[in-house]
Image (cartoon, rainbow, N blue to C red; front, side):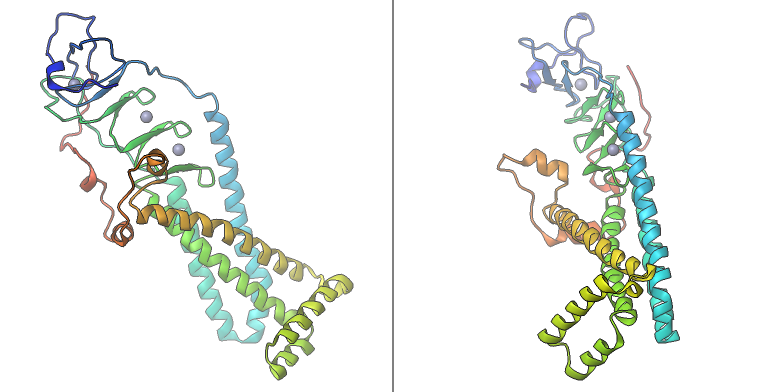
Amino acid sequence: MAASADEHFVATTVDDNEPTCWGCGLHLILPSYTPTFKCGWCGAITNQNIWKRESKYSYWRRLRDCFFVCVLLIFMLFVICGGVWAVYPVVFSISYFYGIFHLTITTILSISTLSTFSLAAFSCAGTPPSIMWGTYPLVGKGDLENYTFCHYCSKPKCPRSHHCQICGICVLDLDHHCPFIGNCVGAANHRHFITFLILTVVSTIYVAIMSINAGLQIWPPVSLRSRIHLHGLSTDTALAIMKEIILALLNSAEHLSTRGLLLVYLFVASISVNVGLSVLLWQQLRFIYKGETYLSHLASQGSEQDGVKDCQNLFHFFGCPYSVSRYLPIMRSSPKTHKK
Ligand SMILES: [Zn+2]
Ligand SMILES: [Zn+2]
Ligand SMILES: [Zn+2]
């Protein structure tokens, strides 16, 4: 229910029983009691029924996020260090230049994955613009169009921002709160998050290939590799290899070395992580393609409204340096906040 017409707006300072617009501080005369109304002057939406509530779970959720971030960091360091320990002696035994080549790829992938993870996890997800509010002459007509008031942050909330209960802040273009980075994904770190997902998907494919490669060098026996060279990789040879690998796993303690087990673990873990993150990445890219965030997608579900599907959305997302200010309805040159 919203009373937004200009005739509902009358500037008065005498009757304190009339509802007050939080945006410009003016008293409004409404035909009847309306819990939610829009100011005809500044455009701010006041909801008289919302009261500040503290989330009792936010402490535990933050603790859970810290735990997930630590587990993820340890897992990434384990895959990098364990992979180098298990794969590189084998790779360097083939050829020195082959080893240097793969060492360079590993270094680039590790540094870029860890740095994008850190940027997504530890940078601010996106701060809504500061804007003048609360004082009638300073708040101009339509300055707070469709702004609401965040009772948690006690400040204006622009139409494109949402409050995250776990982080305890309003985030511009909030996509979702990700427990694995312990942070919201919003306007300022969405690109870091997507880049992290892409790099992790590429890295896990690389780890899986290198694990197989190193595994084939040390195990199964050399006779199999020479058989592949002789007959090519036919279905029969592949089946024979599978059979010998399973037999080697079951029978030979020699083949169950720490390096062999670690290679099997790295392969299984990287494929599992790859499948999970590929699904997430695909979903995220689809939202960007449609010009939506996960939250706006949820909000538009059930309604006929749908984002404009365009590849330009993807180019725009990854293209020019991201400038939040260009997309904001109102940006003040002097972001000074005035409370009533
Ligand atoms: Zn107002
Ligand atoms: Zn807030
Ligand atoms: Zn959050």
